[in-house]
Length: 176
Ligand SMILES: [Zn+2]
Image (cartoon, rainbow, N blue to C red; front, side, top):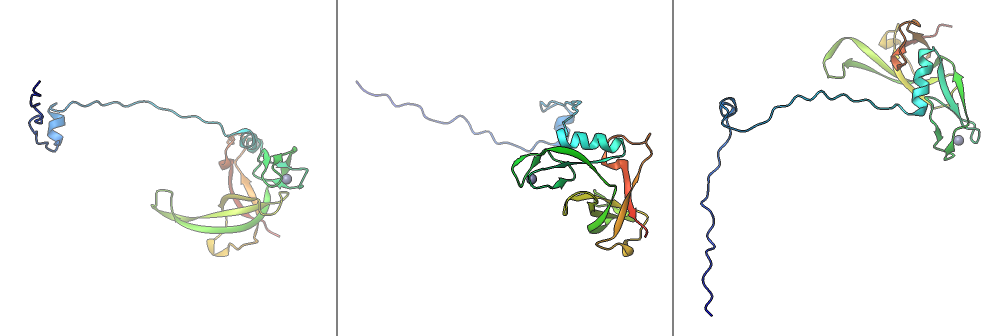
C-alpha cells in the first residue's frame, strides 16, 4: 500500500504588532480591570504579642532562660543558645545604654528630612548584655550622642498608648 504524502505546511504566519494605549481605550484589546479590596492581618506571635501588650501598660517585658540565665529583650519564647523554651516572664527597666547609633538625614522613602533622626540600638537595663533594642533618640543633638550614653524612654501618655513600639516616643539622655 502506498503511503500518501502528509501535508505538513504551517498555518499562515501572522505578524504581531505592539499594543498601543489607544487600542485599549478604543476597546480593540480584551482586558480586565479589577481593584480588589485586600486587607492583611497577621499574628505577632506569642512573645511579641505579650511584649506589645506590656508596652500599652507602660512596661518593658522580657523572658528568662533558667538554663543559661539570660534575660532576653525583646522577649522570645525559645532560647536559641540552649535550644529550649524559656522559663518565665519578667520586667526590665526603661533605661539603658546606647550600644550603637546612626544619624539619618532621609526618611524611609529616601526623601530628605528637615530634622535628622537618630536611630540607636539600646541595651536596656535589666536585660542580658548585647540584647539590642532598636529605637530612636530625642532631646539630643546628633553631635552629642555617643556609644555608652545612658538614656531613658519617653513614653506616650497612657491614653495615647496602643500596644506599639511607638508607645515609646523616643529615648532621651539620662542626666546624672
Ligand atoms: Zn538559655
